[in-house]
Image 1 (cartoon, one colour):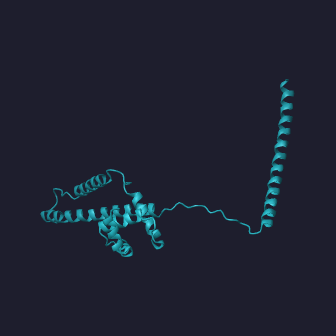
Image 2 (tube, helix red, strand yellow):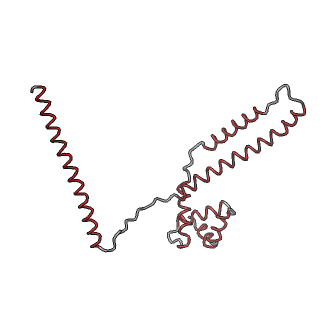
Length: 194
């Protein structure tokens, strides 16, 4: 950040710039000053901590839009408008009055379609960027479930006893199955003659 930028940021009220930014009234120079302030200042006031996170996220997102998106979007809009114009081509059975009406409606419909497509694209871009801006990784906090250590030990003992009982029952079933397999094996060996 240049000395001129630092002086301008100090001279301007950060809170005023943020209000203009959130109201959508800031110009690109003011936005650049805010971005530089939040990216370079280490001692940002605590009341602007969330704003700093926003500007850091916005800075990280810059340049993440794939190349050629605007060209592909423009080509798609042109294809859609060309297809819609083909739908409005008059046939031989149309009267002159209908042709004049269609010619007057076509630019208006085209303009309306441009507005709808550009609005949909703007909303989609806004939704995707808001998703990435406000998506914060959740850190799992491990908390104690028992305030009394004796109660925790008692519960752990009960749980381990239950698990041991279930494990022993399962091992007994396995033992019974092994004995059954041995009996079947002996019967088969007797009949096969080994």
